[in-house]
Image 1 (cartoon, rainbow, N blue to C red):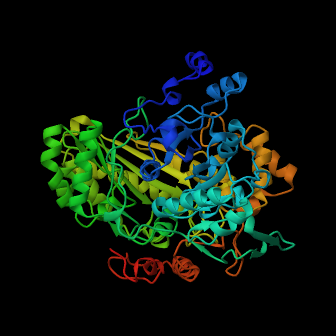
Image 2 (cartoon, rainbow, N blue to C red):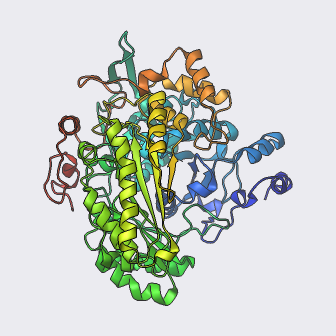
Image 3 (cartoon, rainbow, N blue to C red):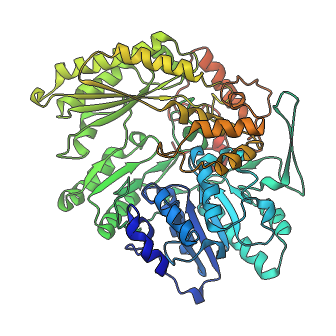
Length: 610
């Protein structure tokens, strides 16, 4: 370890974030390595190490001969201050080496509020921020992750954007970069070749023009770059890599347990949900393989909890059988099975009895809207009676707490819909009185609301976000309507949701705003300790852009979106049709009931594995 680092670690919070050396961390002989990759997560160690996608790609890259992938996380403010004072550049945990010397610097970006941390990490590493200022092949700066379905706000800073699932395309990119270095290509030649690889978007090969009203006029590719870049997926989940032998953190992280991914995609089609659209089509991992991976991961790590994870885990076709097959192993090893959230329309006593035996602390449901009318608008396809029946089942089975998640500001929402949330919470309370098996324990009902953020590649991408003032009025209306003492109401901070909407729908002109905000101190914007909307508003003013233009404006059907170059596999025609159905209050059946022709099926030979 660097002696300078030894001196500063006693002065910072949670020094284990920065020391590395964890069980199963990959160490390689530098003499046997020709490609070093700094795998960067623009948030803290605790958040990044909880990310299953990062663990998967870490394993995929380190399984390549001659490639050493090492982890890099954003330091907390105290550590950054000490590093800058001691002139210690950003370093990788496995080797402790500065990442400016690595061949590829790859960022996993799942959330728009991480954009400022990406810039901060580049600067802390001593790497020029702008792609145009990095003239050599190394370090190559790459970004992937869910937030990259609109990468335009960081287009000036990254060389390549990897779209979709990275297991295959990452290997192809690394091999192309190796070939370029061996054969002495220029960076420009390499980027032109990379743009021909399906799933790789090279922002510098596209020119964006704007109309007088600020909307996008046209996006013109050059040098053979494709007009549309479609995401990559893993077609067969049984052949995809799963990190059964994975790093065991030496300090507590947010998701400190085995995360067992059952399938990718979602059958439901909630119209607000970006993940539900961009992770299509549905692809299941076989039950037997899930059992094997769960047992192997627990045996290797020593964890005593397994989270069964997917976008809508209770829709896994063999969920009950999977729980049964894991039961003997879990009982012998004192391992608990858990689901992060449940659908109210398929929760059952048999499922409940298989989950977290002996730990009846609480369950989570997400009705999203307070009335059936609005649930139909967003295509939630859950009824009030289904929710109440699930709550009765849970209370009868010994559960004493329920968390209910909703959104405020959904398209067409009225005060009646807002007040419907309070009414639904009261009905859940009544269900507890009717059904609880042990009333002496009491009950805890938590209602949480977030502010709806319209996201790219969803049916609501054309819709505006309501104003901050209107959101706060609706929060106040709901807060005053919840009068039951056993119901706790939590609501999401308005400022971060507003900026999230701005960044999610931003165009390439946002790069200047992002850099200006970063120079004013923006970083770790997902954390309230660091976030300042005023700082961002000052940056917008200095750059002559209006954030409300991005967040609060209704878009027309024929408007060219900043993300129009990128395809999630779901067609624009389908998204627009879903918007029209939403406005009419008409629901769309789930994919298992009926194929609705979204287009994603063409990525798996015409038939989804629902």
